[in-house]
Amino acid sequence: MTTIKSLLKSDKKRYPLLKLAGKLGDEKDLEVYVVGGYVRDLVMGRSLTEIDLLVVGDGIAFARQLANRMGVKKIVPFEAFGTAEIPYSGCQIEVASARKESYDPDSRKPHVTDSNLEGDLSRRDFTINAMAMSLGKQNRGELFDPLGGIKDLRKKILRTPLDPDTTFSDDPLRLMRAARFAAQLEFQIDQAVVESMKRQVNRIQIVSAERITAELYKILGANYPSIGLELLEQVGLMKIVFPEIAALAGMEQPAEWHHKDIFYHTLQVVDNLAQLTENRDLRLAGLVHDIGKPRRRKFDSDKGWTFHGHEVVGSRMLDRVSHRMKLSNKTKEYLKKMTDLHLRPIALAIEGVTDSAVRRLMVAAGDDIDDLLSLCRADITSKNPQLVEKYMGNFDRVEKLMQNVQERDALRAFQSPVRGDVIMKECGIEPGPLVGKIKKSIEDAILDGEIENNYEAAYEFLLKIKGEYVRDR
Image 1: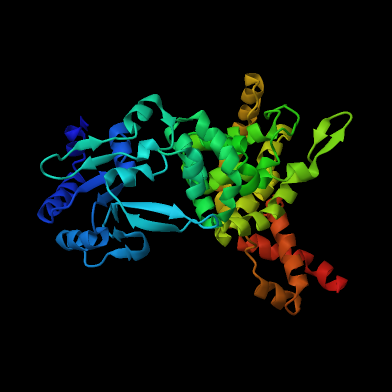
Image 2: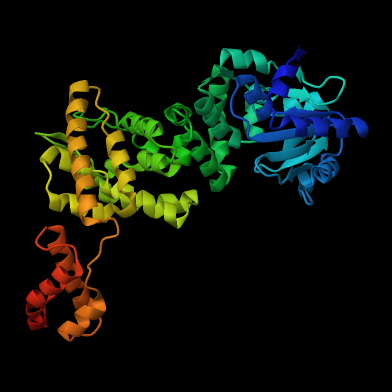
């Protein structure tokens, strides 16, 4: 046993609560421990957000008693698992009975039986999450580490407490968690664990889409998401959980301002975004922005591989992807917009830019224009530093011009200042497609700089063109 009491006391925010749990355990003659991720992150000096308490006894009854002393009226019990959550401001608290679990081959729902501390620790996913710290008065702060978690933390390696085939077969979500922890902690995976992941990969199919998506988002939240994403591809998980991304692996593309392999280009884009933003939806947009390329890949004798229209195809593919991943409609529409527009700012940077082109892009992007610009910056991944400098310089000019246009025209929520009711009254027409055509003509005139973006100028333009549209009727 290693004494790390000073570490426990250093968590000034949560130490009084942990001490209270230990005192209650002493009164009830129960062994009480703080376990799992809390202990791991405390030892590593990482931020602490959750508390997992382990009771050798009735965890739900203990949770009720602890909640009462904390001034919390109700807990959220999970009777089948012997666990309970205590709703508490600023800190997620879970209390569990020490237990062992067994599984049926086609289900992640365990059969639970009571156990002692070591039995409970051995059922956990990785040794670094299988450590416990006593909260009892006599040995508060003592670390119990029967499976070598501290040693593996120092080596920065992920190992399973039991045979990895058993660990992953019992709970296949642990396959995703392995990739997540590798990315979050920047740890290596023990080779025996990697080989087991390859053998057990098809077990992931019994896991719900919601749980898989949640783990993917946690991978995307890492400083270097590519660590976890590359592992998913390496062991064969990507083909099952995200086949559209797996299809990018090994696919060649011109290396002018991208990596030559589309999959590794995509990983670099996501890592670049991770340095620019905490927005995980935007990082996911970076992951999916090129998923249309395999369907639009053609060879040109002069240009090599081309992918014309892949942004449109990729955007359409995201309807099915979002449904499978159980994403919200808001997230789906955001990803579709980012994918559909991701080439346009770079095209402006390469070809030169006009106020009209900038305005049209800003209207199309709306409130997401800043995210789109971040995605486009991240999308420049050439290994040639001179090319990167060239394109980034052009892109800086586009961004500056866009800022000027934005200040001048306030285009983020752009629409014709002359609305449909005015158009119908002035032109003497009923509601229908013709109203939209006239309105679009006014908007195009504003975007092209022919008229000012105000009601007076738009109304005068309507009077000028209305005869053409009404006569066409």
